[in-house]
Amino acid sequence: MNLLTPTLAAIIFGAGAAAGALGVALGLGGGIFLVPFLTLALGFPLKTAAAISLCTVIATSSAVSARRAGNQLINLRLGMVLETATTIGSLLGGITAQYLAESTLQRLFGLVAIAVALVMLGRINRRNVMTDPNADPGRLGGRFHEDESGGVVTYRIKRLPLALTASFIAGNVSSLLGIGGGIIKVPVLNAWCGVPLRAAAATSALMIGVTATGGAIIYYGHGDLRPLLAAPAVLGVQAGSWAGTRLTEQTSVKWLKLLMASLLVVVALLMFVRSMR
Amino acid sequence: MNRLEQRIGEVLHVGTFLSSLLFAAGLVMTLVGFRTELSQILLATALVVLIATPPARVVVSVIEYVRERDWVFVALTLVVLLALAGSVAAAYF
Image (cartoon, rainbow over all chains, first blue to last red; front, side, top):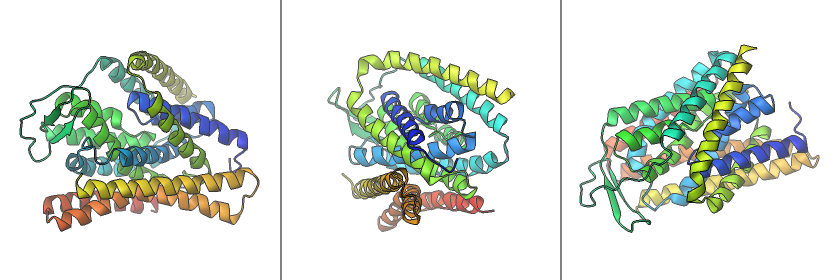
């Protein structure tokens, strides 16, 4: 696998672009689609696929957050608090990954893919909740201007221990499986911790960069991360998320979610079948 | 826009741009047949820049929180850096 042919590079680039575009449309990092493609279609070991995917997670996080910095959606203080949990989680997950068998990782990925599909279906009609604009955001809360309603949204953080627990688990899963972990944090922050959806997504997008870094460093040290394979994936995801930002259209997202949830169930089944061999 | 957010935006912007540029250069060189020491160095540097960008953003935050004398957040961001240092240790044992 040391030889990267132009064809293989083009396939990885294309897969990255598709994952990046879908990620933007669905508010995910795209790793949940890239990892199964690399393992199931190209036959990469799960650790290699996870390591490549973590690089694309870092790239997406940095690019998206650089663009968003200054529009108040990213809650820096909340992000810094929760990052303590995600990075410790990713450290432990990265160490654990080195001791787990390929088949165990595949089954774990299958389970997470099903969970993601369920979350996606459960939140198919979810909209942003407006809160009282005069409320005091507290020490960790935030305030941002919402374009759609033209108003200012203010929110307070509730149930911080729950947010920390979800972040810790997200960090673990991120390192183990090569995904960002936003799919775990965003619904929890939004549903139970009082964070409006867009702020939760933006804050999570910032956090997944530093979270994925913890895992990527460990894979790199163990020789599972090859720069030559990461290159087309990172460039593909960058191109895809750039294109995705331009293409995203509200009306089609619902169908896209349905389609992707079904696809994830198929991915999960394939992962289970593969793990039996 | 607050100062910290602006600084973070700059760090992320430069990191993303630089790593993509180096990845593209290294990849193109390899694909057209110049798989040389230089192309390998470019790719390795791209990876290092990519991976170093989020921690660099955390370092900038530590500095800014020290300037603001916000010791709680200095401690929190240091915990994040410590966990990343733990990953570096775990990578090489």
